Length: 311
Image (cartoon, rainbow, N blue to C red; front, side):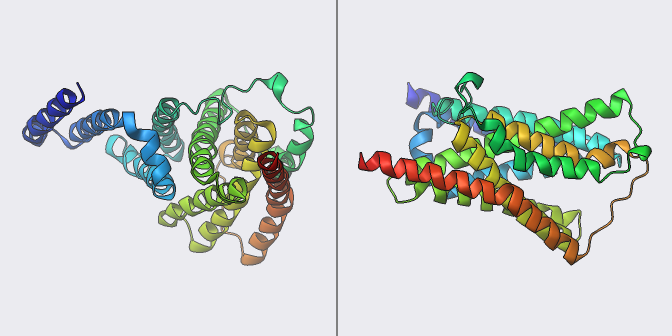
């Protein structure tokens, strides 16, 4: 049966090579994505084993594929300069990619392991307490805005909510769901596996922001990379503490929403680059409110795993 499927796929690829030449750029892109999807389905039966054999390569490849799709696919279908419309296009692509990541997680039977099905009643009673430091980051962003300049309308409010939720959902499922769990599972027989996996996925999360060099000043991007790495550590800490991906997803979305508050609701706002000293202050604040609590939660979880192994 497997051989039959493979022969059909090869035949389809040969036919598609002739057919694709007659399509427009957009149609050719969609057709190629369809072929790629079929090839992906064909190897799904050995997916988990392949991922675990090459964990670092797998997570880096997955992140690169997602970044490439987000950056290069929207321009094929939109050619507007309106940033709001671009954000919506990126969010739609993120939702599609989220579905792809979810399909892989589902196929590998990791749904429960990454905390997608953990019920709220099963969260630790102090979940709200560990959320306070990271929630303060969102509050600091909001109170720094001159409220007299804010202008609300239902269209902007809807876009603001949609863009920030889809970004949080996509990034958490990809980084804290897929990448973190894959690395931890592959390294679980090594010492400090949980801690190492958490740091690795955070560094990858931070490094992924280097793509912003195409649209922002280098100093701004370097700061974003450090910010994202610290956030990655904090969100991983929330995940291992609650055994649920929903709390880091919620906090992530809130922080994103707060940081974009002025951009969406202050007409004509021009965001200027900050100087190095401002970024240093920002890094210190994020480390204290996100990185440090995350390290503490990860260290405790790692210690519990080590004790369980001894027992």
